[in-house]
Image (cartoon, rainbow, N blue to C red; front, side, top):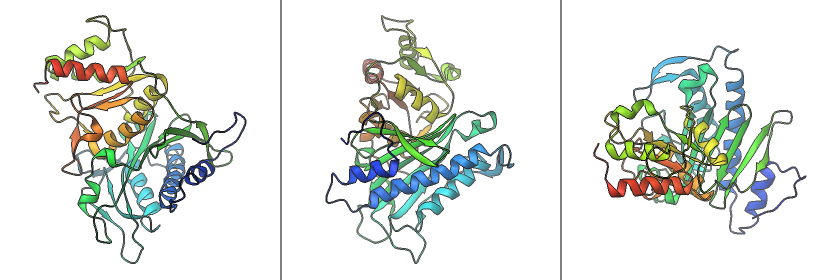
Length: 340
């Protein structure tokens, strides 16, 4: 781990370069992907900040692959990320939560050895009411032989990720990423337009303070899930009560719990028997980050990073956050498996 003094100013570019020097075999391609994502994040942050002034709030009028109404900023953010990556020569394919299939690199551009999966603007349904939203991304090495990326390259279990991260657009813009060497956070200084290292080597508290769950679905939960939430709230057993904090924007809820300790729970229910969150675009990248920070991520019975995906838009239940809270979920479901 590269160490810095408390008074040093470390840009994300400097930090990535210093990390890269620790691996003489590194080609710089993965570093380039992180630079490109930081640039895309700055561009999206600018759009989010000016949304109310530029008539880009509200619905775009289209429907995405999940039959959800696309927001204008969803469409803009999706296009920004695609254009930031499709000509750089570092990727051989991409996939977006907003699009149904593989995003191929245009003909005439060099193909790289990585693939990128991303949710361009998670929580965008909340943008009209000024709730923090975010971009989530995941990077894998290409495993097929041809020059172009194939579905097999995208459908890899989360444990094979070589990088993952998110950018949260809130009171400040912050990028958190991991390449398997800890989780590190960088805050955008708008005065100079640079992401500066603000949260090196993030460690999530072993026990949680917060519970993030949509209790509006309680009537659709099975009995093990209801029992688990009662335990989290200190209503059943001797578990210390967690404070309920739920924004409804995954990046915002996860970010709070990562720094302060807690668990985000989106269990399966009768309306979403396979869960709601997307394995490849949301669960896997955040699971990689939380494990690098000392936490856990599970679907209730399995480690998220060990799930073998079968389709691009596969869904999964998600319990993610402080280790002891996720272990409690696994204990409850092991004793009485979910029946939904």
